[in-house]
Length: 441
Ligand code: HAX
Image (cartoon, rainbow, N blue to C red; front, side, top):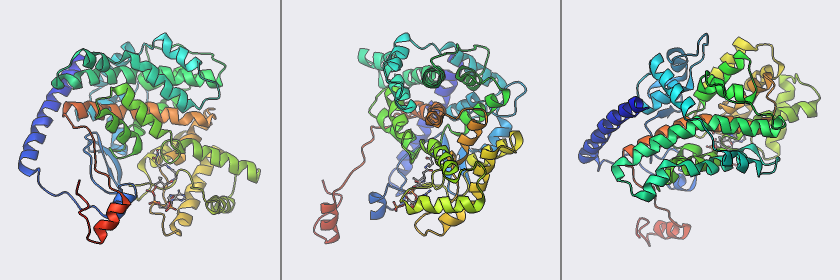
């Protein structure tokens, strides 16, 4: 643990000094213009955050510390005999800013194994919820129950120097990442497997052990979990889960409180919950058409019907991306390699050929291409994980890697409490008539 922490300290001190210089010299530079429509419509395209862990390009997709998903699949260390990256390696990359060695990754794996103990009251809290509570509700409640373990909250209450915030946020983040798979697997086994829980296997990597605790021992499923946990981890800073974690953390709420906020955002159907919505939508289409092999013509009709009912086509569109999401492509490649004849996976590929031209014909839709959520469920169903309400929990376990690495950076760089200015429409109208200064207090 100390090695990684010292390496992070070195990087953070260097970056903090660079930012100080940068702001001294260039702090007054104007970085863009803001249009009234952006203020009203979700701040799209408005630069207002610094997030070091990853950067999203509208055409090319996500890069983590400069590395694209195909590059990460090639360069990050793998499990013995495996071909997919170990998410521990991506976490190291996001945290330290350099590609990890095999040894670095093994080190993170062993830290996470050692810190994975979950206190009994967390399981008792989960058990107190009705079985029909949505898995994301159970997951967020469990993260809140884990908050009793926050070192940051305890040390802050005892009196903590600003300079030391990041160290305790770092410790909490490691503890949380270590504990999340156990909690998430507990929720799955409780809700869908009659509470028949599976103990962790201390010899496995973080994602492999998660697959094991979920009850999936197939080696290819473990590889899928490693890929899944890697590609869902981060998507720069402005998406709802990353931004919510960062925002709540800026009030010095500890990592447990901050992550829970991010997970609540991930649970929305326009964000992470879209992964359950995609499979639900496909299952409903199969039911209605009475076939598990709908033709492209049938799919096109069903898409048009969905749109005519004022609903979104889940898994398609994006606030930033304007091309097929490379996270979709990575999963398609996985499907082609391991399950090319699976009917549901083939349906996902047929949807990919059918939906974009239909969405392209609707002028207001800016991106007709699939996002990460369009593919993930079909791969899980292939291995027998059909309980689609659970899928966003998998996303949440992975997303913790990115948003917590960013939270460590936020505190190490001493970022301020977030507090943008808001305005009223009355004030906007006065400003438009020249009667008021919109920026006035
Ligand atoms: N189906 C139908 N209509 C769509 C659409 C889709 N897939 N994507 C966009 N639109 C509509 C929007 O609802 C919006 O309509 P209104 O003006 O009537 O409100 C209009 O087209 C313009 O939207 P946009 O500018 O293209 O997209 P936004 O930035 O506003 O929204 C969303 C981006 C991802 C929320 C949107 O594309 C969507 O709802 N997609 C379906 C849900 C989904 O897959 N979400 C997951 C996104 C990725 C992610 O976060 N994963 O976790």
